[in-house]
Structures are given as structure tokens and as C-alpha cells.
Amino acid sequence: MAALACARQNPASEDVAELRLAPAADYLVDAFQQFPLVAFSEPSHGAAGTGEFIGALLRHPRFATTVDDIVVEFGNARYQDVADRYVAGEPVPYDELKQVWENTTIVTGIWTAPVYEGMLRDVRALNATLPAGEGVRVILGDPPIDWTVVRGPADEDMNDWRDAHFAWAVEEHVMKRGRRGLLWIGGAHLSRQVMIPESLIHLLDRRFPDQTLVALALDRGDMAAHVLDRLGVWPSLMAAPVRDTWLGRTDAASGAGMRLSTGTIEQNIDVAIFWEFPPRVADDVPRIDHDAAFGAELLRRQQLALTTVAFRGGGIRFEAQRASITSESEPALRAVLAELQRDTTLTLLVKGFADAQETDGVYLSLERARTVVAWLVERGISVERVEPRGCGSARALWVGHTDQQRAANRRAELVRRSTSSDCAPPTSFERRVFARAEAEEDS
Image (cartoon, rainbow, N blue to C red; front, side):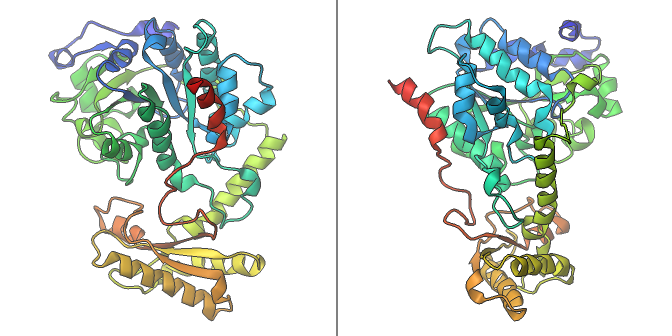
């Protein structure tokens, strides 16, 4: 907690004085008076000090009476019932609990860092002090992937639907129920001019205009020298609204290290939180025993992710305004062919895509899918095993500002054919794992 005490409230320059500073925990709690959704991100996943800050936020004297739900990125929604039972204070075996953060769509193992388990433990401790039925709920925002059925590179691992599922969870379990939710997710999902279309904040702003406040932590190490010079002093763990300030008018990418965003800081976020902690120590980093069962399973998932690139990594591309496959697509096509030859039971949905600047994108995308199908059929694959589907420009990989981004959008993706495989995310991610807690709330 010593790091929390280092916040400096006496600006050292007029540039700092222009910023309306407030202790970050106070600011986030107070923001719920105006917004039902407050979205927060630390500078990077597992950044030093994250556990201390989240813990202090949960212990804020008005947090429990203000916030109903915390929607988190680090938990698989298949285990919502496990999380509900745990934060409610019920006994949950550790082997059952750890499935929450171990079995997400993210295969790096980052969620094994102690801060994420610690957050659930802190909510459990908070709820133990509250009257029955008035505890804070933790909603798991990662899609409900079942890794036991993801065995090959064509299997749909739901990683593409991460933002869609998180937005659905917010809509179904916070907004539709008239509740207030703190959203804890990485900054790339929250920057409004991030170069990745259909990110979480795009979906929320479209469904619930002006209902989400975005607060992003800025680390001194990511800031440009001229920004640090203007600040003069780093007011750690202080929050500052950025609109109509010199900081807000600073370029997001070059000035604040928001590398995937375009425009200014104020075009991307509403509030900056100044962040400064000593570097992480060994006890703070992800904990993976590569000799244990989970370590071996994580390695399997990582290797599988590499082979999946040929199917859904944008490796099969097309010439602009044409259905002609580029020569650079040959390795990815050969990998798909090899998998179809290896697994003779595999049937694929071949999804063709167009860039938004191309004319008649729906027709063109279908022709591209048909071109891939024809390539595979010419090499001995039965036409019954490959179904073409034109997806238009709805699922762009990038916003399409540059030739390189537009080229990546002109692609084909292939997934195992199923009742859920389609161009767009499912309209509902409803799973029975939500039923228990909501039945209790409605009773």
C-alpha cells in the first residue's frame, strides 16, 4: 500500500494545474453518479500495482453501495456458476476455481498472474462484510470456450468473438437489469479510435450511447518526453478528465504509447489515470508449471493457435476488386488442404470477406469464397466438404485506413462447419452457467 500513498496532489506546473486531478479510486466511484458503465484498464495486463489498486478500489467506502457488478476479461463464462459461488463465500475447491482463469480463449497464460485470482479473493472478502443478497457480482467476460472439443486448427475457438461476448454480457447482465458495472479489460478494447473494428467500446457506444466512461491508466514509461516535460511531476494514481485539455489534444500513439489507436487521447478515452509503480517482482508474474497437466495443456493450445493462423489469420488474401487469390496465399492454402486430407471427417465453412472500400462487397466476398472452394476441389477435396459463404465487409480485421490494412481485409477464413459457425458472432451467448445466480436474484 505504500505505492498508493505516493500520489502527489500539488501540481508543479501550470500545465498540470490545467488538469482537474482527483484520486483515481474516488473518481471511478463518483463516475457512477453519471454513468452506469465505467470501463478501466491498467497500463498492461498484470502491470505492477494492479492488485494494490483494485484492492484499494474494492475497499473504497462507497464502492459496495455504488457498484453492482464487475465484468472481467480474465474469466471463462462457462464457469460463471463457479465464480458466483466463490465470491458469495461458498466453499469451492481450488481445482474447480482455477478453471475460471486457466481455461479462457487467451493461450499465453497471463491470467495465472496472482493479481487475477487475488481480485476474486478480494471480492469474496468484501461480500463477506455485506448483507446477504447485496454482494458485488463478478461477471466473466471471456466467451464460454470448451477446450476439450477444440482439437484441430479448424475448430472455432471463439477467440474472434471476445469483444462480442463481453458486450453481450454487459448488455444482458448489467444494462438490461438496470445495474451498474465496472468493466475491467485491456486498453485496446476501450480506445474509441483503435484500429481494430468492432472492439468492445464500439459495440457499447453503439448500443448505449454516452453510457460508458472510459478510464485508461497511463504509465510514465510509455509517455513521450515532451508530455513528461509538460507535466513536470507525475501525479501517480490521480485521475484527470482529458477533454479540452492539452493532454487530451496529445497524439494517442506517439504521445501516450497507445500504439493501436489513431487520433488524440481525448478522441480515445475520457479519463487518464497516472500510473507509477516499481517493476513487477517474481511473485507477481504468471505462474505456470510446465511439468504439470495445465502446463502441458497450455503448450498444446499455443501450438494449436499457430496452426490456426492458416485458417483464420488472414493468410488467404485476394487482389483488390477481384476474386483472384494472391500468390502469397499458397502456404496457407496448402496447410488447409493438408488438414482436410489428414482429417477426412472435417467439413469447412469457407467465409469470404471484402474491404469496405470495395464495391458490391457481398457478391465479391462470395466469389472469393467460391474461388477457395474451387482451389480445394481441384486438389481432390469433395465439394460436399467445403461450403462457401460471402460475408461482405462486416468483419474487417482493420479499419482500412492504409493499403496494408485494406489488403488484410480482403481475405478468406475457414472454420469447422457447425450450427453456430457463421459470418457474425452469435446473437446470444446464453449458457446455463448463468441460470443459478439469476434465479436466486429473481426469487
